[in-house]
Image (cartoon, rainbow, N blue to C red; front, side):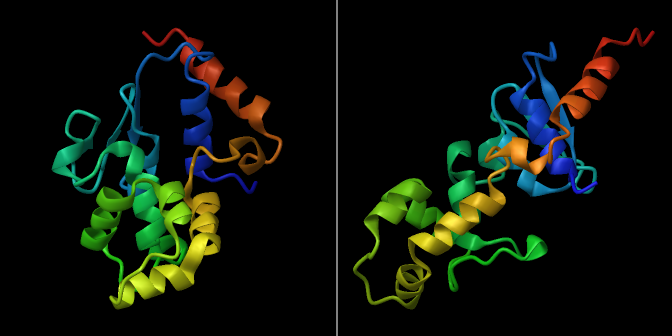
Amino acid sequence: RGVEADDIASLIVQNRENLGLDEIWLISSDKDWDLLIDDKVSRFSTVTRKETTVHNWDEHYDFDPEYFLTYKCLTGDKGDNVPGVTGVGPKRATGLIQQYGDVFDIMASLPIDGKYKYIQNLNEFGSDGLEIGVKLMDLMYDTDAAVLGHKDEILGLVENYVNKDRL
């Protein structure tokens, strides 16, 4: 109770070596799971029927995988009711990433000089707004707390499944 699928996916990804898993395919249409993608973790969307991997990342995004959290913090996530910076969509978020770097570099750069409304909105959103975004959207942030004390139980279930003889 209280544990979401993305919390379990994050827990498995973080513990993959202990579970004896070399590569992981996440099966989900939820782009939030792209936060977990690395050279050993990929995602397949059941809706678009497309794969997202580090090898084809640039077919989906105009920035490197390590900036996906920054992108999410800037643009927000309407589906999860997480606000982003008003006026910052994919293109402006990508531009801010290219100019300033990751979310922490952007926080350190605030306030940013500029007369554009979206820059003023970013300054107003501030480090506090970006930090809230990190805490709410980073699937690797405090996973132990997210699984509400069920870590050993969840990992035990996964380990039992992985170790079963499935002929």
